Amino acid sequence: MFDGNFRASVDRAVKPIGAGLRRTGLSPDHLTVMGLLVAVGAAVSIGAGHLRVGLVLVVLAALPDLFDGALAKASNTSSQRGAFFDSVIDRVTDAFLFGGVAWHFASTESAHMAMLPFAILGVSSTISYQRAKAESLGLDAKGGLMERAERIILFCLGLLIPPLLIPILWVMLALTVVTAIQRFVKVWKQADVAPVTRAKIEMRQHRRQSRKVVRTERRRTRISRLSGQVRGDRDRQTQ
Image 1 (cartoon, rainbow, N blue to C red):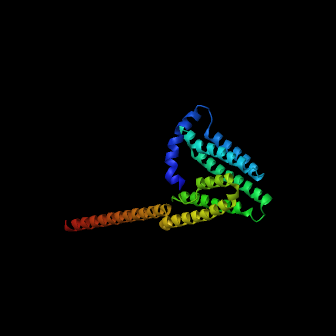
Image 2: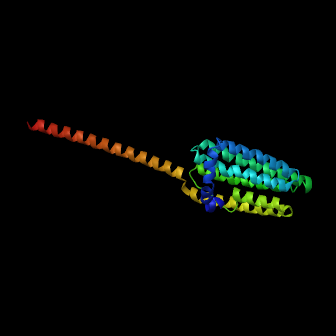
Image 3: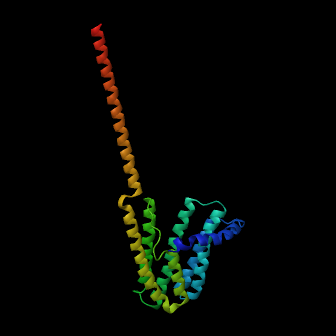
């Protein structure tokens, strides 16, 4: 939802920052690694029960993830490798953050409650896989009520107001499940005849048509030759 409605506005807002970062000599990968390291610190703080400190670190970890794309565009270094690296690090970051919450719940709540953040992480991974698999098939799986940006926002709200952390995580889990269902339905409808499959079908049909044309031309050539031979025999007989 965030990507669809606000991504373009955010990209325009951070564009000057990307131009400034280019002069520092940093690369987008440097920012991505910096964000991961700060996220690890956030996870440790949350696991130790320092939720407000964890909140500050989560926000700081989100900034490099916000600016690395702007830096890549400003320095003209956008690449598939960079996009792949950034996406993988996002998943690793999520694992650390929700793992920190699980550790905190195991220490302060119960072992059963520690499963709540892991459930969110599991469904979130399913959402990410749906998009990756759909795009590999030439389909679109973006959108939904609870994408990564929305999860981070709710996560930060829970850290800001600790008594609401557990209710917020339950809401996050419910909306994440809804998002997974939304994406599944969206891809399922598109995949009635997927573009990749359709392209293969069209290619096969084109090949079959080409073979038919070739066979037809060969028949015509044979008929022409036979007709020519018959006319030649008749002419010789007449002479």
